[in-house]
Image (cartoon, rainbow, N blue to C red):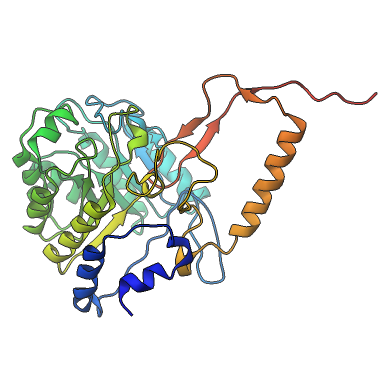
Length: 369
């Protein structure tokens, strides 16, 4: 049975459209990867436990921002919103105190240090390095990752000396994207120089390529892959652009086939490296869903909130029943409920968005005397 035939037999994919040529290409090249192990990473945004797998706590690997919610670039694809869920640590003492507290109370296994960039796409981490060194001395098992932005070799060596374990950076391969999306006046070469500086150290280097970063268009991804393939990186992360961070109408979701071809190309160019795919825009795939950002309760094909295929959520039916009961009762008791202030306020996330506030108005139900 071909891969395409197998896909069409999955009930949850019965309405999905596949690029037959691309699926065939994946199948032809499958033998190359048969013996290679697959690593699965569990997210930390939610605590969960099954008979086979137990996730770590939500605070076991948090992200800290040294600039709180501020960023000098205010890139079009993010508009600083990606900083909102991070824990502010605007001075080294604040970081030190919060990390030590989490070690004592939340079984902290590590953390990400990040922040908003300045106008040159640089983040001033130097004053935090003594704290990092102290934390690694007192808690040697603590895993510390840093989102570096652009830097030179001396600053990369400074991070290495402090004990940083993993460094991450976005690799951009198109000058137009740097200038128009990032609002930045730096050449493509500066991104490769940063990658080279990081790879000259003993730290694990995990570059990210955002597919569709140029307003949803494919532009520069191939060049970014060329840059990454020239260095001995620990892993490559492919992130599909998330239009819900941007202003409405400025971005489109990349075509599924284009994303698939980039993933295939990455797998070939980095044959000995790990390639990870992050796809939070799956439910907003414009190639699969008409009006992908609108709430359409009877939309088909079905969304992927409960997973798909053999990994379909075992609790899906219970969750559907709970939602059915909850919404039925709300509508029965509050039939005239409506938004009072512009709709729900959503907390952005690279994995799952959540509603932090939703103000409504309604006529209170009368209570019998």
